[in-house]
Image (cartoon, rainbow over all chains, first blue to last red; front, side):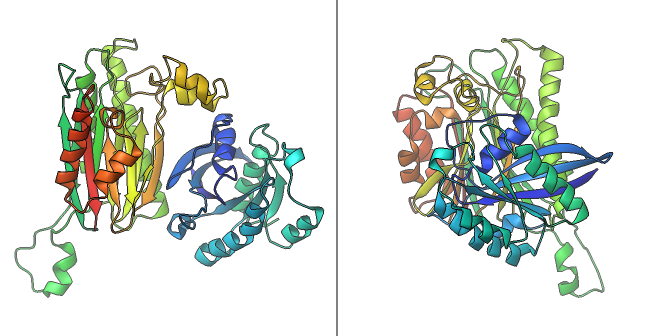
Length: 168
Length: 271
């Protein structure tokens, strides 16, 4: 059985846990729970006839109390960076978080999940921001943990990329 | 191995006739005793028995209202001791795969106990069942498995944070969007367990946290947190005293608050 460790990275409240819950359990909770440490879930997917187990490390988000702990990133095969599209600061900080991650474990296949895409009226990002995102070696996918939009696609793309080494 | 000061305590409380909580604190060692050797002490030092490779802390709370709660909580603690003992020697220098294998087997030990309880006692509302919160400390990393409404907290500085989430009907209904927080607060079934070892549903939660010198880890049964909120617990754990003194003060806090349930507190201070 092939196993790949996927780390969820982002600012607190961006929706990392909700994306994992939607992907693994098809659940969406409106109640916010701050992750403490790391919560680990597993999901096995079939890729081209091969069973691949994703070990999903849902890391506590960056907040006022501290940065993400690089010790949790060790051995990571892929990263899902999560931005809350309704909170501009989560977009602005994601580039800094990417620097922390790549310094710790180097370049690995990554997805940038532009989350909460269902909240169109509160959307805080501008079209120009797309250009900034396009300059980084990650696959940008719009997601909604609430509706499920883009969730399966994000994990499926990353799962395959961890096998092929694709970056975009 | 990180310096540790650990102490655990359980009390029947002021209302219940018996104590259905169980806990364990166990050091896991695998060592070689070299009687004689031509090698230098420096060359043999790493093989000689010494400090613990890992420390297991676990608290299990037999589900109230069912017979055999004590049996169930004792069975899961015994099962864990068996596994972590067999795993001795594997804790140092975990590779990524070994780390996940260890967590998977730890979780499987919990599932095995669950299956055994169901096999012997069947699946009914009267069958023995238990919660479980366990931590295995390897260096400064704490691996956690959690079922039900026992809890793990950690104190860093003056801030106490709950690591585990209660697996109750109320939390589950909010997770699926069926209840609001206000509805959950009013519902009589909200505090019933949605997941228990020996119960109709078992969904162990797996996680880890890296602790730092000065941090304190607390594992407890709900007999403590129903009589002490986060501020009260933090006030006790923030005192410059020993793990034993803090565990005793926490249990005393619950008893002073009415002691309506069995109460167990395990305190681990990392230095």
